[in-house]
Length: 55
Image (tube, rainbow, N blue to C red; front, side, top):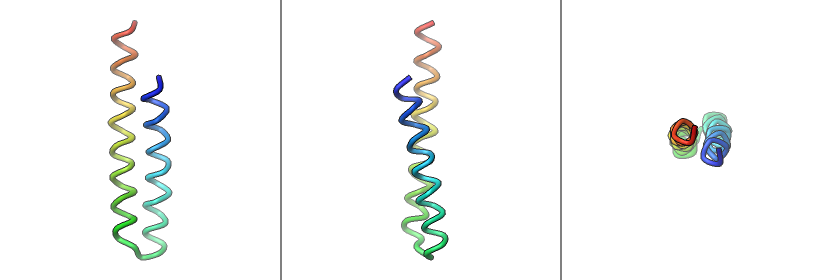
């Protein structure tokens, strides 16, 4: 469950960073935001897998 929550947090953080990068014209921040989102998605998938195994 903790992986899932961390994943959601990283996705949200990534979306905010991506938008801030777009608004500010900072490609580095935009890309970093996309990477955070991808990390978050992977964490959520790990969390889902762990929940299935525990059942």
